Picture 1: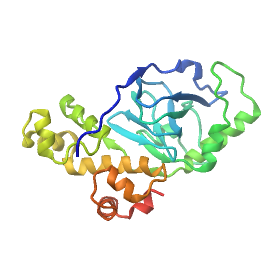
Picture 2: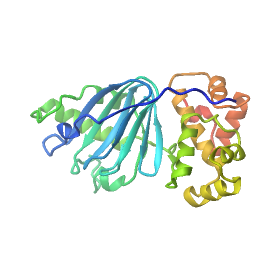
Picture 3: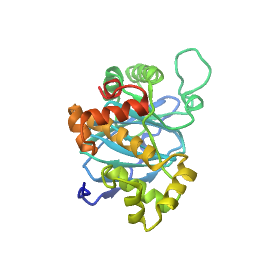
Picture 4: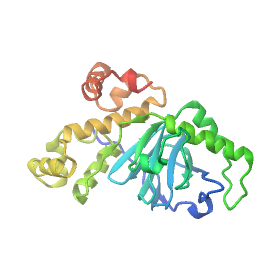
Length: 275
């Protein structure tokens, strides 16, 4: 299948993060930003944690050693100090939560979100969590907290604590040449049908590329590309597309072939993950 044409990406800077910095008085802050497809937010990090959610459309976030597709049904937890890049795949409205290091869960157990979740993780977004975030004030600056915001923040922390993790991130290599190729596959999972095709594009032998996959990612090209396809399937399913359409978009000959891959990889049929 030929590679799809891609529009050039426009790079934009993050919106003045200090203006939304969480404090002890306001431990959960929210920011709203609308971005067009093919926009990329420059690499940046924060001294606080964040939860990135897409209210509409799909975004791709690279953070740490992984990349994640985030449709409206999911959110991404990013710990403090982790550099991340946002790539907008569809016109989107991004809502970001910033959490103060001393923000607490309310289950009576020791530890903050930061000690329990030291690495990036994908979270399911409940309808209640989505509504709570939508009603949180997104104005910048040191606005005084009020009782309503305090109640919303407490409920948001409780919903985050209850949110189930989703194991659909995709690891990225440190090797620059391999990372460039991996990002090309993330842009278009159907671009190369085999490791030989990929190696030819890179000007390297299939054995070299296979060795890099094992040393950098501890997996094979086929297994890694399956994770990419699963992540893209999740994004496509958020549009309520039929399984046959999702399978075709990802280069599978039939919906049953795609379903077999999902069950083999995740141990359950697609309906368990992509509803």
